Image 1 (cartoon, rainbow, N blue to C red):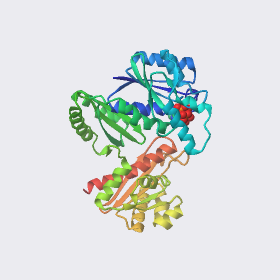
Image 2 (image 1 turned 180 degrees about the vertical axis):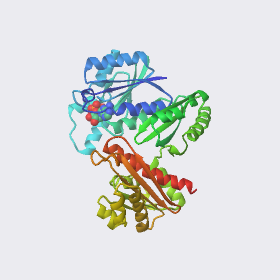
Image 3 (image 1 turned 90 degrees about the vertical axis):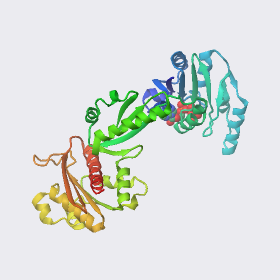
Image 4 (image 1 turned 120 degrees about the vertical axis):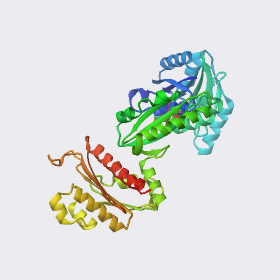
Length: 411
Ligand code: ATP
């Protein structure tokens, strides 16, 4: 079943507003087994909207249109849909009453413009909007069934589920989608590691999406029945997981910080963090996860040498002999924060995020990570290319990854 998405709005074509509606609708349609073949966006212009409706109606089976249902003069969608098939607009009394009641309830006078929102192409099926004033509608143009929804994302999302999908059953061949997240491998390396997997599992398509600094890998399986698709997806997923090995940090909707939280909670371990170059990013990633107080005890941003010495107990001689960005300082920071918090694990970051501050010995992008735990200390030295933001985010995730590795080793 071929689907197209049409978004309308002059703000969109001028670049004032990013079209997030199309990607949301496309993802939901794809999950339900539709093949989305085209996105189109047109400004608030009668001629262009009518042309776009007729063109999509000549190609697709299903078209979802968003925007232009409001009360203002640039809201033209219903009139254009009527023109596209040559029917008049007719006033829908139940919708007019519903709009009137909504205005009464919020105590704002209703204007003649608002009445326009109850006008629909003759013969259209009106779709109630529980979250706003403008109802949507469904009708056939050419060979396609069209669903017209408001532009406001929260209203559109709600109506897509409650109205559109109620009228549009999922295809029996809806794909099964299984996801995992990878850290520490570039997309090209993942692609190379998974060479041949699609050929070995007919019906499977692999997808990659960079959600920096993690990469999401999607196993999408299509088969004549849902059960068959699930079976292939699960077999293929196991192979993908094995090939990517320890770089797989999370599955499903989870992410590295969530997966680490689950691992720490399962072991009843606690964590303390000493950060220099990451400036609190590690703590922020950890505390983004609800319930992180179960395992995250303390985070210290020790930027100055005096703070590293005074708060974390890094010996002055270590700082003088090796510098703040060194293996020795990272280890002393991790051990220091672990001891001060009384945590199972202490992790530390210290590095040169740039753009300045690099030397031939210690270039921009150099980061030392250390994890102190019940089985001793692990140190990692990395040099990442890229700007300050990239280096810091990679370092913060790498610190969490190293802690996850210690949890895995101990299980
Ligand atoms: P309303 O009845 O609330 O006026 P509408 O159907 O007339 O809804 P528009 O006027 O086209 O919708 O858009 C309303 C608002 O919704 C826009 O100002 C914008 O904030 C948001 N919006 C519209 N289209 C999109 C889109 N494609 N992606 C993301 N946001 C959008």
